[in-house]
Length: 145
Image 1 (spheres, helix red, strand yellow):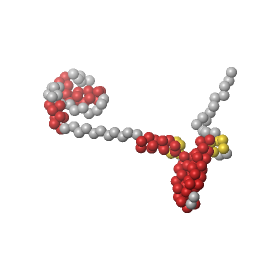
Image 2 (spheres, one colour):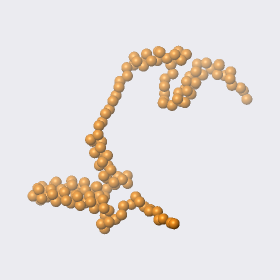
Image 3 (cartoon, rainbow, N blue to C red):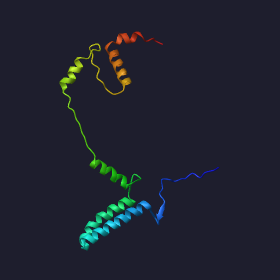
Image 4 (cartoon, helix red, strand yellow):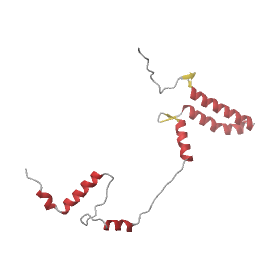
């Protein structure tokens, strides 16, 4: 038995003429909010000043895309950032503590600073340092071909 697999599932269906259901709801909500502002303000000039940002925001919600994503995603992310907790922690480390840790290093009385989070890179760095300390011993193991 064959089944038809839906394709182009990312594209929304055009239900109301050239508009999708989501676009139609945004525009309908913006028109309703604009009508409420006009009915409460009473004055055409005052209501026009208040309605212009509403119309702009409504048009952005319905049609504007940033990086091929709807504008509502940007609004949601901005709102979450504005409302969410922001915790920035900076801990100052005294130079005396670092010097004390360096003095306590017991690896052949030679302190090897940690360069990265990779253990393999740290191992190669420490081997290079030990080879530089005793170059005669490192040449004994090599054979001349």
